[in-house]
Length: 173
Picture 1 (cartoon, one colour):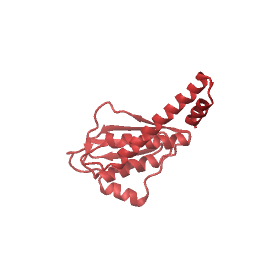
Picture 2 (cartoon, helix red, strand yellow):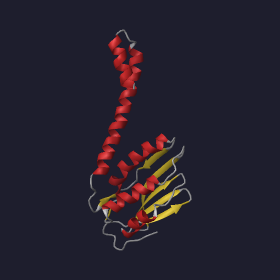
Picture 3 (cartoon, rainbow, N blue to C red):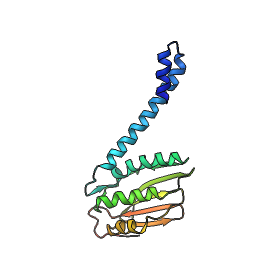
Picture 4 (cartoon, rainbow, N blue to C red):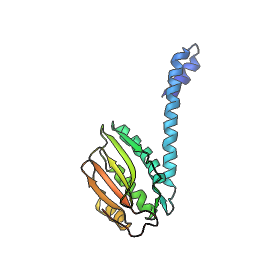
């Protein structure tokens, strides 16, 4: 819409430059957000390889679900870990399914939801906290847990537990 305003005012001539510049700036910002979403969609569509770099899988998913959260008045914040989170040898499709299910199961309505990765007890934990969540549906949860990914419903969100690559036995929460 902002581009249409810029185009129509430019075609008429004699437009106030300051007014047109505001619409051009807004259009540029919208295009940058759109480009970031397209990049995230492309990243999600590429198959992940084992071992799975959890941070690299999570970033584009948070970009997409951040847009979904914003549409309902919420905010999704990805907290960058202080250290590298390494990788997991869990099935790449199951990892993506688990992360997607965790992000999709949150009620974002006007909430600020925080997503983080941290290492705890020899495993990597992905937490989505700040709003009520639902656990993945039965069939989805079964696929996730068969891959050795633990699922824990929290009072204010959800937590996934991934065994690290080369970490030995798989664990579930």
